[in-house]
Every structure is written in structure tokens, then in C-alpha cells.
Length: 258
Image (cartoon, rainbow, N blue to C red; front, side, top):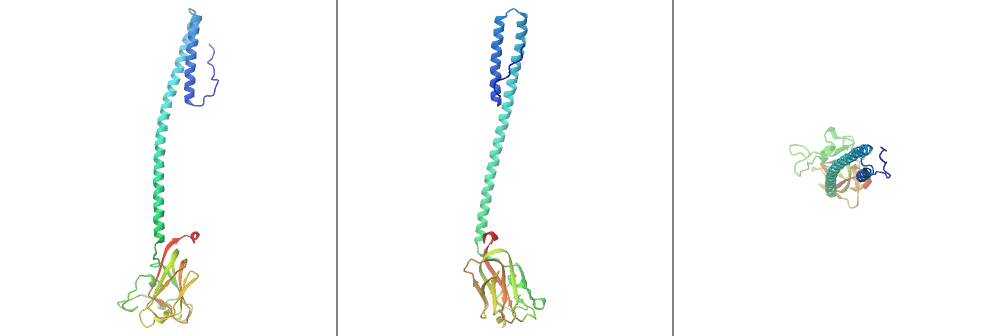
């Protein structure tokens, strides 16, 4: 018996293959009937009929197997599509949450608040290793008592050998902020004049200077001034000391935003 004819078109997918097998089955059936009519009674015909029946059965079984595989693939495709839809919903939810966090961060950065409390400080000399620079950011600044005794207002003070111009005090805010207001709380006793001559800087930009005796000095920054370090520098030949220094502003901001 001659071998089965090869398909004359490329089989590109399972559906096309199934249609091809069905068409071949019909052709084989027609061929079987034709041979039976032309050669009825021949033993060779009987053999050919048996072979044709076997071939038809094989083709039918192949088609059935392909249909079963197509059902399995279709079910897997539906399951995968459902999972992809679920992942897409989760991504949308996460994106919305991230956008919400970004909005909250923007609101927080726009709020003017106290920036300096408990930040890192430095001064170029310290009186008797006692009046440290950290006292100006400790949050203690009352209107009662002096800087000694039971009602203490701890303050910073430059060293004994620094009764001259050049005393310096620094507050590191830890990031770049938009500066709104700087407040310097002077000591309460008769030595308030040590604040005279002090220059106030944001990084390298001069914000103001002190030229009279008072309890509190307030410097409001009206321009867009951004910085990380707040400097107090004594320009006169005398000491410098403060009970508390407060820096108010908003941020932080990255260097690229400035």
C-alpha cells in the first residue's frame, strides 16, 4: 500500500492540524468505498480495506489526542490570564500607594518646623570643657534662673583664650533645607553683651548680625535660602555664648532640586 500523502500546506497551529486530519479521514473513507466497489470479492481488496480501516482509526485517535491537548492548553491559558490580571491589579494598587506616599512626603517637606533640635554641633573652643556647643540644641531655654544652679539654663561658651574675634559655632542640620527663621536665645544675666557682633550665616550666605542687647534675636529669611549648616561667628574681640539656637524651615531637598 502506498504511504500516506504528505500535507501540501504547512501546519501552523493545532487547529489547522485538526482540520487537516479530518479532511484526510474523509478522503481515506472515500478511497476505501471506491476500492470496495471496483474490486469487490478480491482478497487484495480485503487487505487494503483492513489497512485503510487501521489508518483511519489511527488518524481519528490522533485527532482526539490533539483535541484533548488543546483543551488542556486552553485551561492553562485561562489560568495564566487570570494570574496576569491579578498581578496587574496588584501593580496598580502598589503604584497608587507609592503615589500616596509621595504626596504625603511633599506635604511634610512643605511644613515649616523646628529643624535644629538635637542635631550635631561644633565650636572651635569650649570654656573649661564645660559649656559645650550641644547645649544650644538641647531644647532647654526658660525665662527663670541663670545658667548655673538648680534652675539652670545650660549654655555654650567659647574658651578662656578666645576673648577675641573668630569664635565660631556651627549647627549641622543633616540635609539641605529651606530656611525660614533663625532664633538665638541670649543668656539672662548681665553678660548679654557677649552676643554683640555675632554674624549669622546659612552655609556661606550672611543672614544677619547682632548689634544690641536683648533676650531673643529673631532672623526671618525672606528669600529662598537653602542650606545645611548654620554658622554663628563673633566679629568682635570678645566671647560668644547662647542658651539656645532654633532653626525653622522646610525640607529636606536633594542637591539637584536646589
